[in-house]
Image (tube, rainbow, N blue to C red; front, top):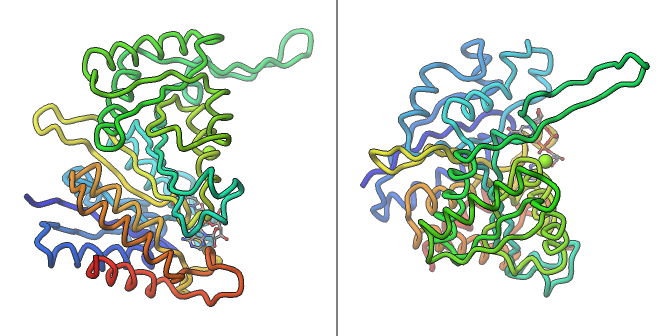
Length: 366
Ligand code: NAI
Ligand code: MG
């Protein structure tokens, strides 16, 4: 089978970290994995070339690809371009047109970096969980949404949390499917004790779990308790599924269990095509274009490489390859080959390309 990848390196350190992914794609290709790659512009570089943050041709390629790998966009050069063509508009357009309603943020703690966590080594060492956040509904988008001045001079602000059965069903299925490729456990998080959307969320997730995923363990955790458990004993979780607001907060808590911004991958998934069973998907590091270090070869490529690892696992079903890549990253970190953001105190940091080369060498050796 061939896997069609669209690479959108973007701006700043985006192209630098994407180059390391290309090395790894090249290595897998040599080993017989059928990757077909195309590269296009997004963000400020697309604006410079076409006057907009992503061209229609690039959007067409994104629609046709099995997965999009996205670097990062933006930078001071484009700070004054008009709002609707600014670099971020490229990412927003991709999310909207590909219908990416599920955001996956893993929190992985490599043993070699456990001491960099703000928690105790034994609490985080070997941590490997994923937060599945609903991305296109809930209180960030619900109507009415308003801030009005009342007759008595007071102001009144309203946000509305809205979820429908269909929205909950589709995010639940993403979480259950994911759990099947992992350790087979889903923890669903809401506040059904005080919110109607929480009541519906729990009902729907339970029904989908029983009807379609009886083989996957399901538990329900109130969102405030979930926040506490993430800090107390995060290794009890495998996949956490939650709404847009709680997911925003819980994924940032989980991220900080593990250290640097340069280490955090993410995925955004869309609806399943009923004919092919495939989902639209975009994989990107959590970090931005880091203009302060761009062009210097200092960026940590592991968030970007890890995002490609997620594509292997979740878009292409290449589980052995994904495991091998994770192992290679862990070995490189353990060997002490690290960029400045994660280098141990008193050790010499290496450059972006050195980390990519070391990962390829480990892939070869494993
Ligand atoms: P940033 O994530 O680019 O950088 C924050 C800090 O983390 C900087 O000191 C940077 O050097 C460091 N850092 C980030 N990634 C790193 C890596 N891979 N290795 C080592 N150090 C790393 O966020 P910031 O500075 O707020 O934004 C810079 C630009 O990026 C802005 O134009 C912003 O709009 C854009 N941005 C784009 C995003 C995207 O493309 N999805 C997300 C966040 C910001
Ligand atoms: Mg946030």
